[in-house]
Image (cartoon, rainbow, N blue to C red; front, side):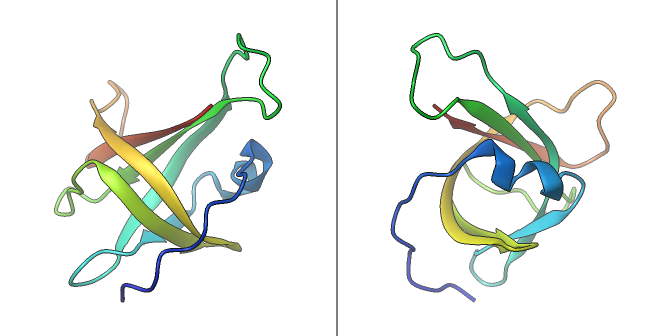
Length: 105
């Protein structure tokens, strides 16, 4: 189910910390894909930005690989919001599947 793209808004780390371990659904065609939020961590604010930077790490099932890009995510009280993700290597102790990161700075 692909809906219209939501308008951009400021997104903060505090929106994601309660969702670690839970799945958010990515609007994909032909069907949504579950992305488990594995980690939500602050980054060092070298530029003294108004919104502290942070990183999110997601994992999809082994049979669901997403291409890098922007996806509308929703679930657990979050979204719908457009999030840009990129693939990363699986952590050494990581569960099987495909891993992605979203960096907010």
